[in-house]
Image (cartoon, rainbow, N blue to C red; front, side, top):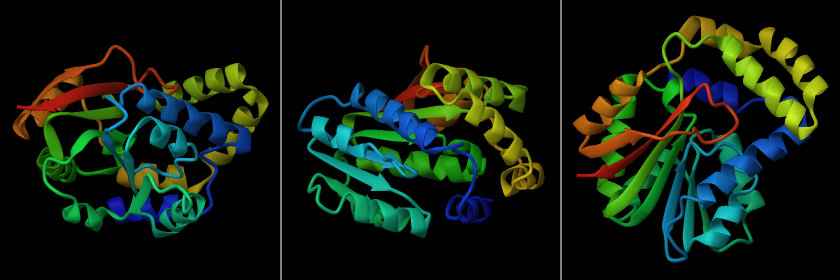
Length: 231
C-alpha cells in the first residue's frame, strides 16, 4: 500500500490545483505546527512532511527540525530547498533509527495515517514513543473518519479556495483529480480510516495517553486530530 502511494506522491500530480493552493496549504500547516512547538530549544520531527514549503517557519521557532520524507524525489527537493538552513535536517524514514532515544519534543504525523496499514501505523507509534522525551508530544492529524464521503474533502477544498483566492482553480483541479491516478489508486487500495475511539485505542496500545483535539490541523475540519503523550 505505502509503496504505491509513495510512487504517486513522487511523480507530478494535481492534488494541489495551482501554486497558490500549494503555498497557502503548506503555510497554514507550518503556522499550526509552530503553535505546537513548546519552546526555542525544542527538537521537532515532521514525519511524511511532503514538500513542506514553509518548514523554515517551524525552524525559526525551534532548535532543530527533522523533515522525514520517504519519497526520494520529494526528499531531494527538500534537501535542495533547505540546504542553507542549519536548523533543518532532511532525512529518510530509515534514518530515524539513528536519532537518539527520548530526544524529540514534538512529532507531527499529518495526513499520513490514511496511506498506511493499521499495523504500519502502530509500528510508527511505537517508534515515535521511543524517540519522544517523557514530556514530549505526538500530534496525529488529518485523520479520515469512517463514513465521511470524499465529497466532504471536495467541499473543504472549495471553501479553502474561496477564502484564499483559488476557487475557480479548485473546481478545475477537482475535475482533473477525478481523472487522475489518485482516484484509481484510491479505488484500488482504499484509504485507512479511524473513528475517534479507534485512534485513541491504537495510541493507548502503543503506550500513550491520547485525546481528540477540537480542531484538525489544516483547512479540512471533516478530518480529525489527536494529542498523544507517552505514559
